[in-house]
Image (cartoon, rainbow, N blue to C red; front, side):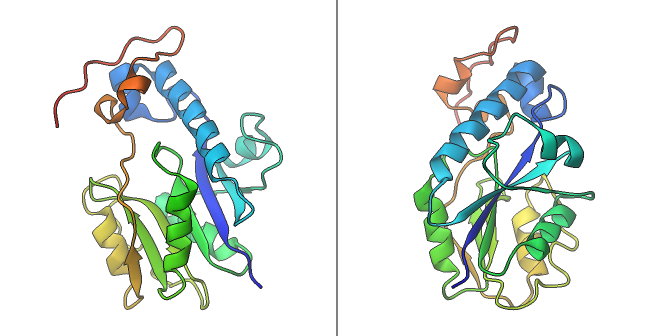
Length: 211
């Protein structure tokens, strides 16, 4: 029986190199601190015997040797290119079986969300977990056939078209949509609790505006 694989895309949490849009609101040190602790909590929540948990790290050499991430979790290098290039490479390099890739900056992800995505792959070729801004927090493939050659071709990343473009790149694949979850790009996306907990040397986040 093939085993399900959950891949978390992570980047070394250096100030000014991770969550820079958030950093423009709350400071680069605070944004990197938030990301590091967000990832730690996420990994604790989604590590379960129900699937194999793998970290896809960036930058490659630094991430593979990093002491920031749990040493017991297997790691693979993301490689070069845009987000689509890197995710397609991950999908093609994994062992056989259903696989889901998630971002690391979505505080709401829990094991039940991931389990629903894998369940959807039982009768679909692909699954997407939408985000409210037109992107997505999860993409998964059943992987009973080769990964589509045009997967992620022409996707306009970091914008309102990312999900629609990804769906178009999947062609005739049967795609399920699961839970909608919010990622964190700006200070207004933070929970009130996170916004009130600045890192040492950082500046407080501005008040969260009404949405």
